[in-house]
Length: 493
Image (cartoon, rainbow, N blue to C red; front, side, top):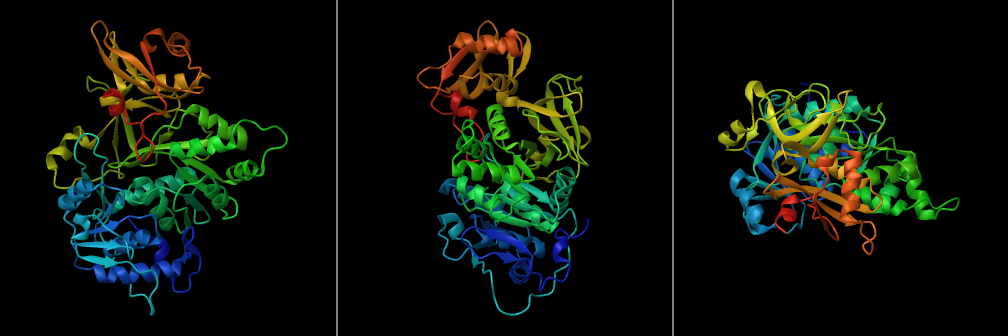
């Protein structure tokens, strides 16, 4: 593997190309970034592992880059974590130093660590570049969301980051000429690895909005010259809402500016959860630009993506990325036949090396011959494109002898004009084993679609045995910070 940041290998002392721009902060050029990160990296030698207080600021990006340049693994800490979660991650990873922006207030556990403030500018030339660590060296320890227990630290080696970014560059024709706009948090894969380290590896620019606003997206893509937008479904839903229904020949100025900005982007990418069909359609109809989706996990980084030269197709997350092997495996341990649902298992250079300090948990996630069990269920189109139908634990419903994926029912429900949002779960049934339950946010709360209408709609779209046997109406679906529906909250009332 070459250097993790090839752009830094060239003489950068006078390189004024933009590297990092955070709204309301002075931009950092590659020369600025090289100097700031290089100085910090030189001071990190000898550290075993550093934590980075991952606020949406340029200091976070400089801190993580510095750790990577120094060959010291970094643990990004979610600044919105509660005291218990922060204490667990600090205790579990045992960092020897904490990096933070000046003035940042910390919970008790991170605050008890030795601290070094990250400075963006300092006089004098940057120190010499440190030697490049081995590809298998740990780069980041990113903690999982903890939906099945305390968060686990996934150890991501340098080769996984390089392989994922390079594979996405191939799939999306992503180059140093691109300016990536986003407002994603910098403590996880989507915002940090793809959204910050990705452009820096490729020599491009990042424009981080600080926080998501519709106006910020319009300005970042329009006035800011953004060519790519990364977001989660909640963000794209808000963009779709702002675009509104077809206004006819005289749209308002704000809507026109937003539509033009989205239409002018080279690529609109949604990830971390499925983007509802109606939001796909509203954005495409208003802008002429479709949103593409990709799929990955903390432990695997990116697995599949819709390619830039393919047409966006709602409901699919594209084909396996270059270098990634993917198979679908049934409950009998055999690969499924085309069209059947199976668990996604993957193999390739994008995989993590294991959970920090948890060899048993690591071993349990791998099948024979190095195949990682994702726990996600999917089927494949004839051309190989993957369609996620849900998690094995919460989205595979066994009803009347059938194995039913919740995701395809959710997509069918979203095609009903009376449905704004939908989630599907299974619940125990004395006759069927499990019955299909639909949780629906009506498009018009005063006139929700009748359960019989929704069941008939699904039966016509899919099959009668996939129709919901019960429909429950909500004002909103429970979602986490990344926009994923938290089905455990539905199941437990």
